Length: 228
Length: 228
Image 1 (cartoon, one colour):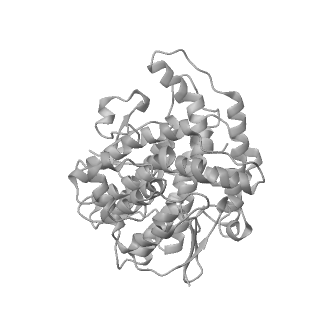
Image 2 (spheres, chains in turn red, green):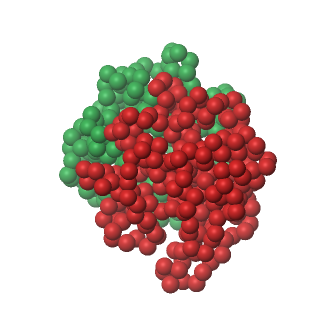
Image 3 (cartoon, chains in turn orange, cyan):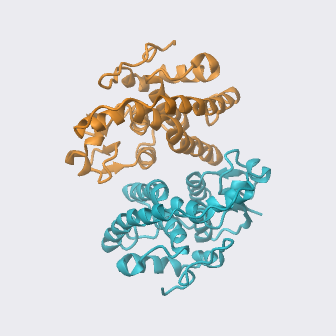
């Protein structure tokens, strides 16, 4: 059986989960509290990062970009890159945008402040640390610029990279969905982005996210709503 | 004519320059002081980042990973990915390692402290700021772990990702070459990595780097030596 080692609110894990589900590839799930650096995970990936995919033949794959490129090459039946060269480049440009800029400026900051910081402290026997509210406020301001750019894209295109649903939508949705778990997006201000995100939430590949939970933090009330 | 907009000591620019040269694709060069945020560059890439490639048909490509994937697909004659699926995944895993971990922990820190910080201050009319010597010392310690991992790889493989020269070697060399400009690598401690790097420096694709200069900082004495 194919096994995905992941953490429910890790955006890179979500990218790979969406990719597997869109390609209708079955996998069993191993949830990893990656900050605990347990040998079960570090034996698979010395960096101790998730996601890690162990494919049917036992091959171990790490790094979410390497994994989705591998899946696209190994399982080409349901393609998540467009055919045309420049559309493929545009897809990868947007993936990089979310996996680096949006991640460093928004999704990883929110995830760290609201969950991982506390879990990591707890696992080291240290006292609990609350989120830095100034940093969260600043992060939400920066996120507005990203959402405005997303709005610019979806006002002009059917999907982020053009006519078709691609790994650009997968990657953006993976990061946005993490922030949305905490209810940190003011959807009323971004109607067109909300419509794009609603279309993604309606896809069967997204369903697995609805039941994701992390200890002590319930998701926002609309988190599992298709019409929010 | 194909045009590459780049900054000489930007590791991502160097990755694309090596890739173009390995594929024997001619290009004219536009050096961009990207921190000045001039419209010539931001009109091509709103993020104001380098590298930006304008290909023969006028297509504008940004993000170094999207660019090298595009070049591999558009110009497949001289391949820089291996044929086999898992070897391709291994190549991409190592590219991500250098483009994210090594960059954030080492190459971008050194470049910022030793050059860009000063240039950016100057362009904003502020007084010059010297490098943070504690941070540089700390960065060199972290780099040792990366070089040890590189040594582990080259002791077991002909090239970083396996039997063949790939984009993993291109990416690693791009980042290492930037640190080497400043003479910050203690090569005597890493004989096997030095041999790997010497083989890369001997390739015609690397030659363009030998004459790269930045204002006020001469390269290390061995920077343009093939046998250092």
